Each structure stands twice: as structure tokens, then as C-alpha cells.
Image (tube, rainbow, N blue to C red; front, side, top):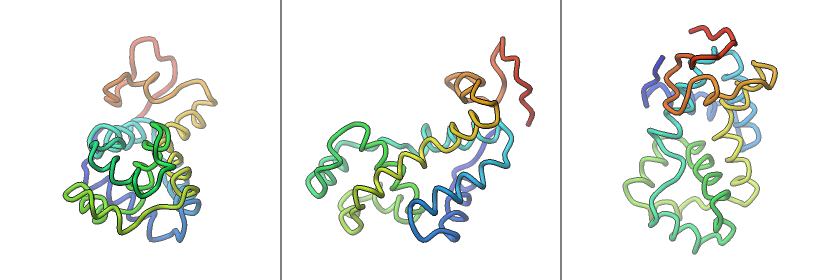
Length: 158
């Protein structure tokens, strides 16, 4: 199973329409993903991490670290990536074109921390659906193909 960038951003925008804060966004995102089958979760996670990207170029990091020194660690940087994705496609793409645009919307530290929930939402739902036994990479491998790896004894549909 695969997911396009457009499908990914449609999911993000759907969550944004029903949320007025980062905690609310995360609740809506998890509720949306909770109804998905495991291959679809893998496709969503793959687009977020490998296509859209959670980590970003050094220039953006330098700009944001100067604006908000709490973005100085790798952990906070990937959480910032989740926060940035939660801002929606238009803002995300504007920042990717010109990292200075990020300065128009500097997140609060607590919102950056909530960004971590965004980037691991599909992984959490996978663990929930498999009673804590399997993560997405355990089921589908590093390429998150949506096809179970040899030895996976969990029924994966999709």
C-alpha cells in the first residue's frame, strides 16, 4: 500500500480543521489513524518520515535555534518537524522554500513537545492494534512496504 503526498496532506488538513491546539490536533490525528489497517499506517508513517521529512536542512535549524534555543537538541528538532507538519501543507512548503518564513510562527516549547506525538502517531497506533507486540518497522521492515516481513505472525491486512 502506498500513500501520496496529497493524501498525506489531506489527512493533516482534516485534523487541522477539527483542532484548535496541538494537543487537540494529536487527539484528532490518533482518532483518525486508529481506524486504519496496519499497511495504511505504514504508508502514512513512510510519507511523513521519508518523503515529507521530519528532519530538515541545517539552515532552518540554525534559524530556529537562534529564535528558540529550546530547539537545540536532536529530540527537540524532530519534535519541531512534527509541529511543522501539523501547521499544514501551505506553511510547511513555504518554510521549505524559504526557511526565514519559519520565523513568522515560532512555536511555544510545549507545542514543540506535542510535535513528538505527531511524528510517532502511526507507530503508537500500530503498537496499540498489536497489543504492544509489533511496531511498524518490526512488521514491514525499513522500507515500510506494507508487506509483512518473513516471520511476522500477526495478521496484516490491507
